[in-house]
Every structure is written in C-alpha cells, then in structure tokens.
Image (cartoon, rainbow, N blue to C red; front, side, top):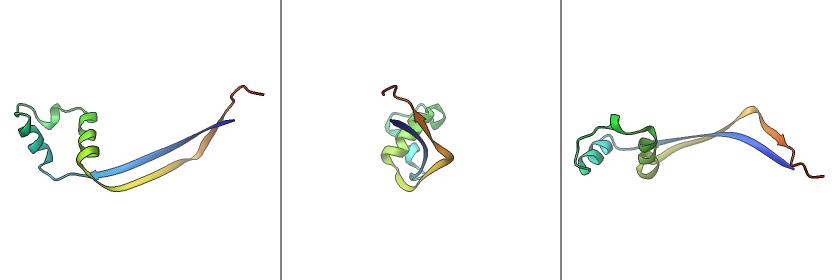
Length: 71
C-alpha cells in the first residue's frame, strides 16, 4: 500500500541588504541581480541566509491512495 501526502513547505530566509552587491563585486561586476535566475537567487538565500521561519501546511484533503497492483 502506498499513500501520497502533499505538503507545502514555506521557508523564509534573511540576508544582509548588501549581500548581492558584495557577491556581484566579488565576481568582477558586469551583471546585476536582475541577471540572476530565480534558482540562483534562491540558492544564495538557502546557502548563505539565516532561516527565520519555516511553515508546513496541508490542503484540506492532502492524502491520495496509490494502488501498487499487489494482491
């Protein structure tokens, strides 16, 4: 028997205001935060930021049963 549980995790990170200025300067400049993808920005927050809140929530009906085909 298998069950799939859908949960949603929200994590809030905090970085100093000048983090991205320092990051761009250390890489020789020439680009801005607007040139970074959302994944690159999220990576910076996750690896260098301070976690200040984590919240896990569920839909009203978060469980769906999956048939494994076994008898």
